[in-house]
Amino acid sequence: MLEGFRDVHPRAKAIIHHGKDWKAWVTCDRDPIERWVDGRAVLLGDAAHPMLQYFAQGACMALEDAVWLAELLGDTPDAVEQALEKYRQVRLLRTARVQLQARELGTHVYHPAGVHALLRNQFMRETSLEQFCDRLAWLYGSPFP
Ligand SMILES: Cc1cc2nc3c(=O)[nH]c(=O)nc-3n(C[C@H](O)[C@H](O)[C@H](O)COP(=O)(O)OP(=O)(O)OC[C@H]3O[C@@H](n4cnc5c(N)ncnc54)[C@H](O)[C@@H]3O)c2cc1C
Figure 1 (tube, rainbow, N blue to C red):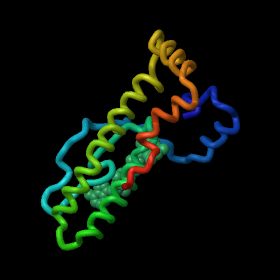
Figure 2: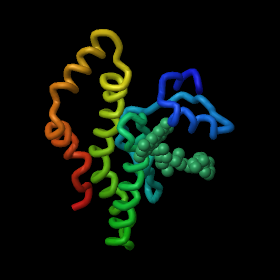
Figure 3: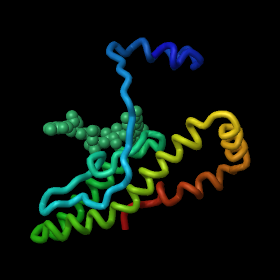
Figure 4: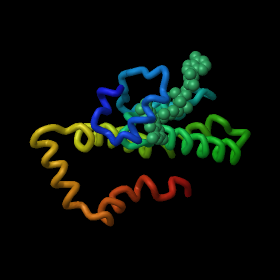
């Protein structure tokens, strides 16, 4: 751990000393899938759409799933299977977009090397704060109608 964070600020590095059982593990995602529902069984969160951490959205998406599920089941408590199918339809493309863009962020923003990294730097320099925020409006605008 200390070797990996050798160049960070000492105050940030001090945090590492508080951990007693650091572990390294592989992060992984999966291509989006359409099947989240089987009768009255349903997936949400990472079980439905595991994603890489680069967008910092896995738990956010799980929470959105939970809110949608609660709302839809609350609206039609006597039609559970229809509510689950509606939940799947509402959540599928938004979460798939986050899943795939998280993967892209890892490749093109966090971990490029050589010319790829230079291009990333140029792209970031040429992007204004306003453009940056506009590009994220689909994510941080309200996911709820
Ligand atoms: C390095 C890293 C950084 C991240 N950073 C962010 C971030 O900044 N923002 C963000 O929104 N998300 C982030 N995430 C993603 C986030 O942690 C996950 O998306 C989120 O925890 C998924 O929640 P979940 O409830 O779907 O699954 P989990 O949190 O994995 O919960 C599943 C639970 O089920 C339990 N379980 C498994 N099998 C069984 C069984 N057979 N019986 C009973 N229990 C079982 C597990 O022990 C676990 O407690 C990050 C993830 C990683 C790895």
